[in-house]
Length: 235
Image (cartoon, rainbow, N blue to C red; front, side, top):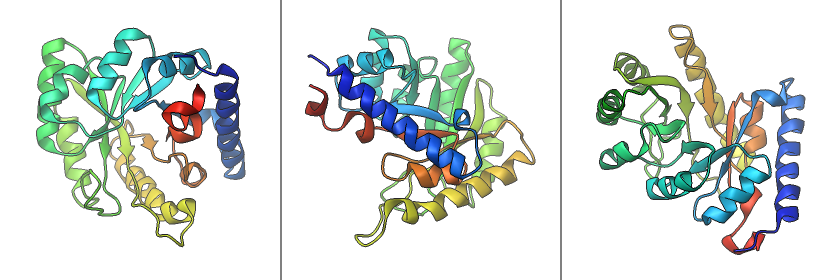
């Protein structure tokens, strides 16, 4: 597969420009926001082109894609999609960060495999801030107990929180619709940090709402379509 490197470089520059402008408008340092390039559904050649374009953090929704692509190239790999317990063994020690830990049973399995592999697996707790039945994540009310439980288990380290906001209504701008949910996640993180300073990261914001995420304190934004578009867009 042939990748249009010039088109990809232009998209990377455009996304980085959006992050910079949003950060500066919020009085933040753009370097404090990590761009995670989500290469889901794209072939490994696109992931390789992303690394050549300076994108060091790559995200995948599916474990099988993460395994395939991570075997083909060096990068900091992030699992940003739901994780089933029977897939944990394939991810622990392979992913730099698991963004989607949302229940104690999953914590237990990650801990068990991490201890067996003699690694410490960094994780984020996914929170369903909007109580959307179509989204994964623990509730805001259940978050403190889950973080406390996970912090006691060997082999994993909770370093922050993640959320996916509900889809906006047809008459809503994505950034305006998402902003209250991002704010709620930041406020939850701030309360948790009072007890555990390690709970620092906020993974929130995608192609349509990254400005709102940066405004509300995101330390990681997960960008797919604004970088890679549809499968055929970079050919």
